[in-house]
Image (tube, rainbow, N blue to C red; front, side, top):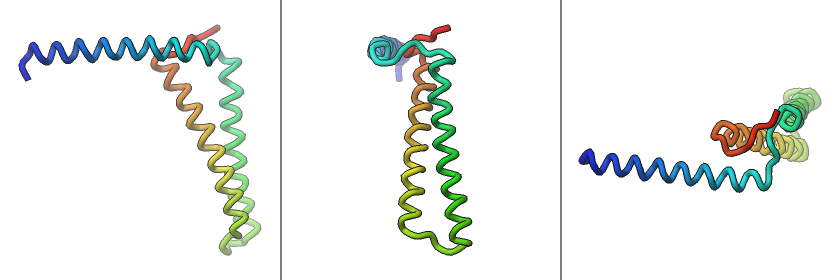
Length: 108
């Protein structure tokens, strides 16, 4: 690729990146408050509780079934707990990503 074309491409990509950042900041600021320790911690705690609930369910199934195949209902409950945990974890990871990219305002 000729150097002029490469420079134009890089300039274009930088402009697009800046426009995306501005759009994300504007949209996020309408829906998400400024992030601080007080309002991020409850989400982190919720993820931890859901993880613990999922793992506790797995241990309970293992103890109750004594190595035998779990009942369908047990697996259904375990799956539900896993899905709840995974969704919360993904939401928390998405929040960390928008903080890292500067899409949300950070409070004190």
